[in-house]
Image (cartoon, rainbow, N blue to C red; front, side, top):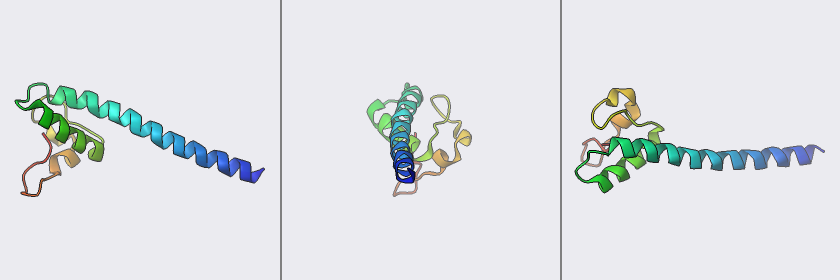
Length: 86
């Protein structure tokens, strides 16, 4: 009986983590679509916004600025020391 319970618990954890990733991807896509709506090079903006959102679990509101709302997003830098996130 304990083995069945432990197996059920393990399967539940695996399934719930995969569902979280799917819902997080939807969250990031919708937030980044808004964030990048006025970007000159939209594809690049969406790419980097998606990377930053996946790592930080947040995207600042609006199309520009407001990075104080998400310190992780604000503090990510590229290899040249410039802001990575749009």
